[in-house]
Amino acid sequence: MIETELLKKYIAGDASQEEKEIVQLWLEADKKNMKEYMAMRTLYDITLANLQETNVKSIIKKPAQYYLREVLKIAAVALIAFGASYTLFLYVWGKKQEDPVMQSLFVPAGQRVELTLADGTVVWLNAQTTFKFPNKFDKNSREVYLLNGEAYFNVAKNKDCKFTVNTPFYDINVLGTEFNVLAYGKTKCFETSLLEGSIELVSKNKEEKLHLVPGQHVAMKDNSLKLEKLPHQDYFLWKEGILCFDDERVEDILNKLSIVYDMDIQNYNKSIVNNTIRCKFHIKEGVEQAMKVLKIKTGLQYKIYEDSNLITIW
Image 1: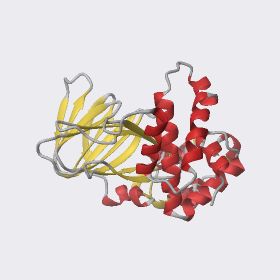
Image 2 (image 1 turned 90 degrees about the horizontal axis):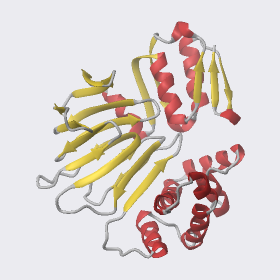
Image 3 (image 1 turned 180 degrees about the horizontal axis):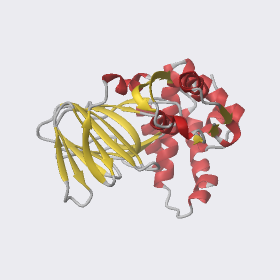
Image 4 (image 1 turned 90 degrees about the vertical axis):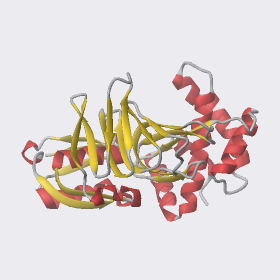
């Protein structure tokens, strides 16, 4: 059992590198640990979202930690799951349980989360993903928000109530289907792949619409959508903790590793960027193992600076 104070420091972003490694090992040791972490993380994110302050730094330093500390005093009594953490949050904030409440989840670097929504829709969230969803949906619509990151959806069918995924780039409307969405704002990267059913992409100004059928993949290039070949099926194994690349450019692989592990990767070896290789990485093995594989495949040299989350390649 991990110390509550250490987990609180990790969630608040105040943990040292050594403490981060302790928490990471604890998370990997048991699925129950990840559920406990995500429940506490949910409390933290919702608390931040509801505090009416304008200075984000002051929120993190004072009110958020205060409310987090008070909530976790209750939460630490038992192994909490999402339902329990939500009930505790409602108690703290004095909201009525019958009112829909938006919840927010953030998936830390090197992790992934599986989540079942109120309607039975199953969502897998990749590393560095921020996802907002209500505790329950109304009768006429089901809306969730992929604020940043990558998610795989298996949407519960309901012909009378469409399901909408809002992203910073496009919104996706669907009645019941299975698809993958990547929308990382930092890299301005957006793409979606449709495996089953049908979806409609709608631009924020509602002027651009695009219907996809199974087997289609679309990506944003130069601020417009381009139909491309559907990625190989192993591309979606990130749900199971495996990153798979099939004849993909080294530069694209490095960009993906940078996102998943929250590392700044600076490549000074320009001779390898357009080389295409095949490789697989188990996410939990960490970025260093991935770099060792790339070294064997390409001959690159690298150095990892953990204190500054930096990797240099030459």
